[in-house]
Amino acid sequence: MSDGDQRHVTLERVDTGVYRATNPRGVELTFGSLLEDGFTPVELLLAAIGGCSAVDVDLMTTRRADPERFEVEIDAEKVVDDRGGNLLRDLRVTFRVTFPDGADGDKARDRPPRAVRNSHDRTCTVSRTIEAGTPVTVRIDDGTG
Image (cartoon, rainbow, N blue to C red):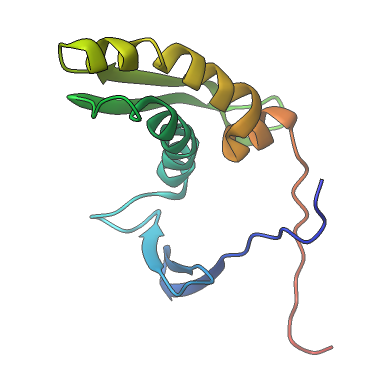
């Protein structure tokens, strides 16, 4: 495990319930629970889970042929736990990948099951972090010290 391989995102309040995330490359994404035409934080979490595996699976399956269809659907049930807190249960990631007919498409068609398994078991940082139950530390820096 590398101690120096940090990830970082900064959030800034834009308006009530609306935030701008900025990554170290300067790319910005606006989201929030009160943003009418955007993603909520929960939807971003689902997109991160699916996106992480999609990148892995895409790289491992499209070496032989470009897919005719590559779609990932991520579902979860929002529940209230026994302490009264919100959380997601029963997260499901469903891949729908089809390849063209022909020898290259046939070779590519064999790859998604192994690629999905590899992503889930080894390479998808997002879903592996969630499944590991990694603690989240919350701090307040009021700027006074």
